[in-house]
Image 1 (cartoon, rainbow, N blue to C red):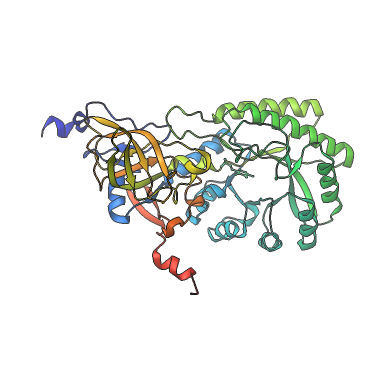
Image 2: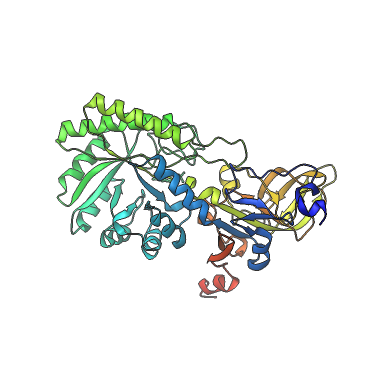
Length: 447
Ligand SMILES: *Cc1c(COP(=O)(O)O)cnc(C)c1O
């Protein structure tokens, strides 16, 4: 046995870094220098299932659920399914004791099909249709978050037995996110502005309906929030509002839903929301607000989506071509792009990319990883470091792609959506199959 066989990392000049902040915790290099997640080599997944492919680490998803349960033992944790709603994930999070948020009949059907108890489902959305509300009522979901006066009337007409509702308020907290994702400000499409006439009317209107039970208030401040103080502020404002409702209507609300939006790191060094700090801030804010208002402590509800699944996901691509533009950039074109990851185009998101089928030893180049879709803006990552001798056919892996990737994917350019392959304890398992050309042809029913 040579030294190189004993210490494969000697092959590389610098030890590669697979930063624990952006990769699943069980990510390693194997003896051949290939990246493994959950003890499965990503290159083997690419060979077996083709590319592009979403890989999802079950252990990481469950570990994130457990972290929330451990840090917030008294809170109710609801997984926001819109981040990635497939049956396997819904069943994992339910097994870990979480509730599940849904925002459409499709998500509701998937959650129910996964065996999530209806009483542990929360229904959201600013545009719930009559059919969707009816499906939610029929299923006997645990909570419906009401968002408009029309919905209150409709829901009351549909409910045959009392329905527990939360009222969505926008508390006017500006978290300085991307305008597409910050939803806590007053002038926006979701809910009722806190302190407004409309909010007061909505409370009164819900309380007048004999088959609607107002159990609490809800807010969602936005996405990628890393400063826990914003949530502390939301607690103060909403507990004050609960005290107003008690004073004016003699009704004691018992639940305070703070929504999701907990930030994760997409690249090493990105700011992340620290759960322990969040717990401390919430505890202090609840103590202070409840003491000030002489209000009994409500049950807190937290709705993380991204923070549960983002880091569990890794997307695999194969290099199609490497092009050096004279006096310009080096473009590494891969077989996926904005169809499977629209977040770059939508939010200007930035990603790390690594070669997965071999150790990235030797000299590196700075390259732009471009997608295969017919838009100049279809770039997955700019200025990433990749081996200078990278060739067509090699496998690239993009970490932190478990949330809002599959769920936002499209069939642009009539390219079918990638499969989702779960890994756990050295085994790979197909959860969602690849969308084929036959699938696309089947929907297109007339010439
Ligand atoms: C989107 C959303 C969430 C989850 O947001 P993340 O950023 O994925 O944590 C939670 N609650 C509501 C109401 C949402 O709209």
